Length: 69
Image (cartoon, rainbow, N blue to C red; front, side):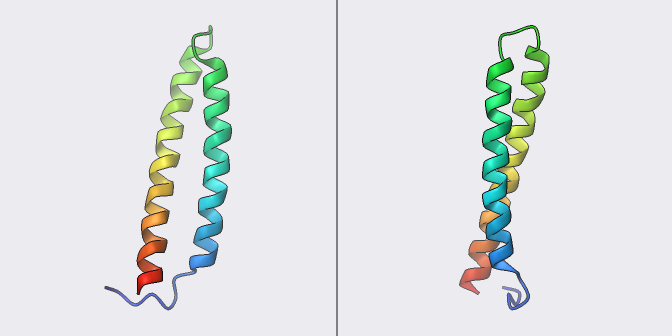
């Protein structure tokens, strides 16, 4: 495993928290637009939500690895 001394884990944790909040906000907007005339926008926002969740998982994995190292 690579050295983890320079990995800013507190900042990464803060970013993960911000991503959680952003994901919730995007999801709420997407859900409010679903099954309306703006359903096309809801579908794009659900895709954004999936990307944000994937990014959060990557940050969580990185933080976990850094904390173990």
